[in-house]
Each structure stands twice: as structure tokens, then as C-alpha cells.
Length: 121
Image (cartoon, rainbow, N blue to C red; front, top):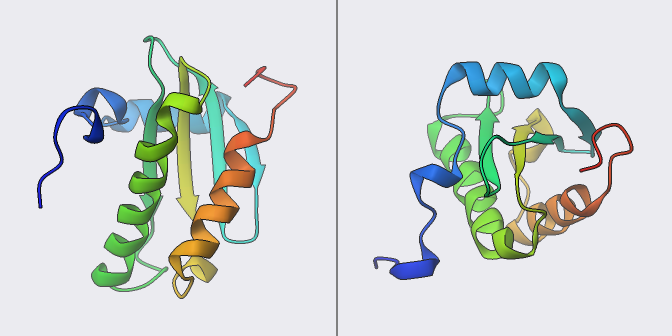
């Protein structure tokens, strides 16, 4: 199954370089939930971008990739509704390993919609 047109999450909508991850983690506003840490900050571009970090401590590669797929899908479907020009870094905690997709979506939904007074995001 391939995604077409606006359904895709292009590379321009992702944080790709280590320097981007580090800059956002140092200067961004942190929102913590039970299973994720979401760091937000201003982007240089016009569109919102996503970065995902899932440590090897969370689980094996199957578990890590499952979490990353679900976070990307959440972001892809809600990207148009999010504030433009904002970078999001999602860091999964160990407890995220056994979560069903519905819990991941609801937890990220709450974290992404919270407003941070520090950055105005």
C-alpha cells in the first residue's frame, strides 16, 4: 500500500539532522506525559516538522519501529491542524513499549494541543 499526494509525510516535514534535534531539545518547551516527552519550538520554515527519538531501552527494534510508525501516522493525519512553523520532538519513554495505538494517539493528542507559555507554541 502506497500513500499518494497529501497523504505522504515528506522529508521536509521531518527533523533529520542531529543538530536540529539538539537545538530543539535545548531551546524548546517540554510537555511531559506518562509515556512521552514532547518538545516544541519555532521552525525556520513555513511548515511543522516532526522528530522522533525512541531509545534502545524502550524495547527491541520491532517495538521501537512500531512506536515510531504510530507517532508519524498521528502527526501525518493532524499536521494541517497543528500550528504552522512549529517543530515537534517526541521522545518515547520505556512505558510506551506496550501501549495500544489508541492510547498513544490520545496521549499525543493532549500533548500536541497544550500551549506552552514559554515559546507561544
